[in-house]
Image (cartoon, rainbow, N blue to C red; front, side, top):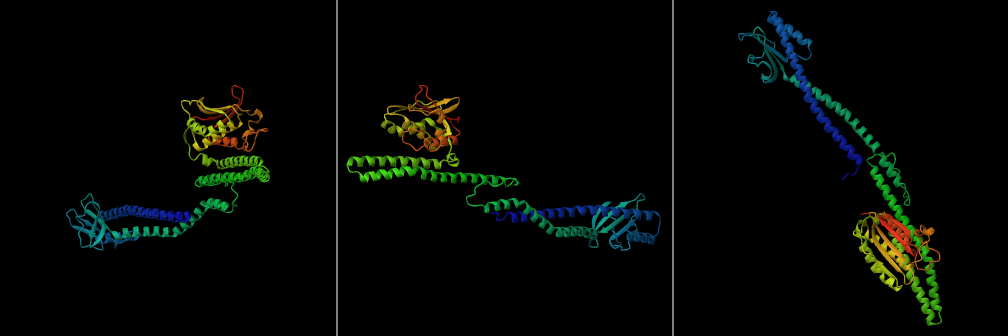
Length: 449
C-alpha cells in the first residue's frame, strides 16, 4: 500500500536514476576502455614505425635508444619505464632492445596485437616483420591502460555524486508541482460546508486525476438529489398530513361527544376512512422519496410486462369488485419483454390501474392491454371514467395536483410516481381518449429490449 505518492515517486525516481546512471557508468567504462585500447594500440604502431625508421637509417644502438627516449618525452601517453621494444634480425639475432631490457625473449610473439605476461606483469604486445625480414616487437604495460580507464570511471562517479543531490531537489520540486492540483482539490473539499454539494471545479486539472474529480462530482450530485428528496419528503409529509390529522382529531372529538350509538359509529367510520387515506398517502410519499436514479437502475433485467401486469391486477381485483367494476387483461402479444426494474415497474402498473379503478364509476370497466406497436412495447390502460380535460393532461403529473371536483379518494402523488418511474426507464407517456369517446386511455411506451 502506497502511504505517500510524493515519497513513493521521489524514492522510485531516484532509484531509477541510480540504476540508469550505474548502467550508463558501466557502459561508459567498457566503451571508454575499448576506445582507449584502440587509441593506445595505435600509439604502439606509431612507436614501431618510428623504431623502423631509425633502424633503416643504420643508426647505432645508443643513438636509436636516445632518439626513442626523446620521442617518449615528447609523448605524454608513454614512458620508457612502461614500454619496451626488441628488434630481431632475419636470422633470429637480437639487434636492438629497450633500455629496461627484459630477460624474456619476445621473438616468438605472434604477428599483430596480443596480450602477454612478461616478468610477472601483463603487457600489450605488437609484433610485425618489415620487408628486410627484421622482426619488431613493441610492448606496453597494461597498468597504464587500466589506470587511464579507472581515472575516467572515477571522474564519471564524481560527476554523478555532485549531480545526484541536484536530481533529488529537481525531482522533489517537479513532483510538488505535479501534485499541486490534488492539493487544490483537497483544499477546496476540506473547506466546504457539510451542506454544500456543488460540483468541484474540473478545469485546469491533469487528465490523470480528472476521472476522480468527475466521479466525485457525480457523487455530489447523487447526494444532493438524495438530500433534496429527503427534504422534500419531510416538507410534503408535514404539509399533506396536517389536514388529515386535523380531520381525524375532529371526527374523534365528534365520536367522543356523540349522544347515540349511530352517530358514534358514523364518526368512527370516518376516522377509519381518514386513517386509510393517511396510510395511503404515507405509502405514496415513501415510494416517491425512495425513487432515484441509483435505486431504480441498480437491478435492470428483462421483465415480462404481461406477466407482471397479471400479478398486479390479481392483487387489485378485490378493490374493483367492491365497485362492481369489470377489470380485464387482454391476451399477451408474442413478445412483451422490456428492460427494467421489476419492483418499480410493479409500482407503476399498480398506480395506473388503481387510479383507473378509483375514478371509474360503479359498474364501469377497466381494460389493460400489452401490445407491440412499431417495434415498441405499449402498456395501455383504458377506463370508462370521466377522463382528463386536454388542458390538464400535463399538470396531472405534478405532485399533489388533483382535478377540481374530484370526489375519488387519493393523495395526488400516484401519477407523479408513474411519471418518475417512466423517466427512469426511458419510457414515454401519452394520454388520450378511447375510440368509443368515453373515459381515458393511458399509454406508456417502452423502448424495445
